[in-house]
Image (cartoon, rainbow, N blue to C red; front, side, top):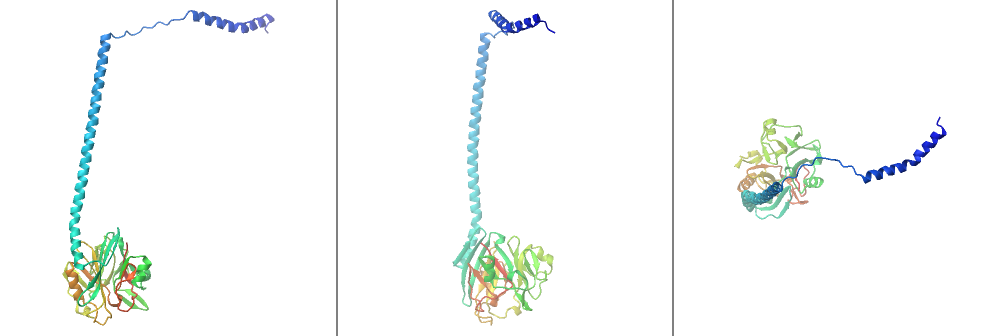
Length: 355
């Protein structure tokens, strides 16, 4: 226990502490403390000047190097731009030159058809409609360039095997720009079935593949949008052509530019409304639909006449599709030909074309 004297001393020390601190501060401020250290001697004036000059020379050299680099880059960029411009010009000229034979060929085959009456052109397809006026028959030709294979397809009547509808009905239902009747058919039990081998979307319908018989031939497009067709004895033989769709009728008119003999039994009736399809060597398609006022053989065209006409137009392969009252040509939403029945006949298969 602290005595009163000890408590008094403690109070005195606490009260005098600030004054003692101030006194010590004033004492040391009046007599500063110096810390002694060894300083490195400054280089002589001559050495300093040399170092400065050397640094200046190095900076000058760096500046020149940078300027040279910038100039070089600009020159390279200029050369690159000129080279790119030259290459683009060469590519453009090459494309133009490459397209010239195609344009010349197209002009030549179109000239043989005359002047188109109507035209549909899009990124997917180009279609030109021509009038055919011969001494013994009249009709229409439709020249088609498929820029996209999907611009053409085959459909079933009402989308069901055994059903039928007019080509105009199919065109309207699918929103197509044009359409024709396709393969032949057989009636049975109130239904209308596609004849023999029929394909849609790369798959066989109507009972699958059937070997060609009675001069029948398959005609359609492969997955690349090229016309294929002919007689096929086996499924593998047709599958090798990579078919996408197709129908069957008779006969083959041209194969590789050569006229096929027309079997006598298919020459009757001698004259009739006709629908035929063929291709040029550049894979453009040509469809001909010939008018006739009946199916008794005294109006329309003979198969030999169409065979000769197609050969003269430069067609490579050509196939006869169903004709007579089945012949139909729809273009731009209307019936173009004059159906021999006085109205369009419902059929089970149609080839449609889309913009």
